[in-house]
Length: 229
Image: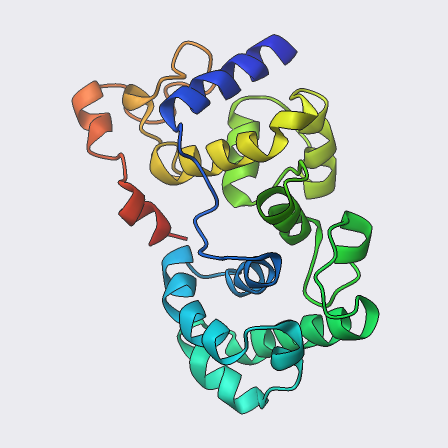
């Protein structure tokens, strides 16, 4: 199992050598806000509104002191904008109050912030701080089940199970590769099995069309991938 899992990670690395977080950010604060806002929407939509948001509220202190209605106006297109406004403002206030205005770089601290669970914390740790983290989103869960890496359903248990298979130094890159693969080829309803480099290793090969031409039509470009949930 360990050998197969690591081989899959290597092959995905060859297929997606530039796999990275598809939310736009320049610092941990921006990534934290963008990740909270990305719930139940697309990265494309988040990337469309965050430049305006960050220009107006460049620091946690600015965001904490903002007028909620002004934030709601900016992020309204994302859906659940009132709840998300409350979450990012609560997060910002906690960063100001408890961490001197700087987003913390430890899991135990990040998960104390409003709106921040382990998934969000690991996104920030791995992509903004360079601390290895496993991001268990819906794509990740689907793929590890298809790969038979674990039968666990709870995200925390999935995180720990996969962490036993993949070397810690590779956790962040592996997470991004699985997410990219889930968005581009290994779709929930109809995976592009016939256009997949993992065909010989994947125990779920055949869930989608295996004909190369048919499967190729299901493959999404990067632009299409970030525009999908």
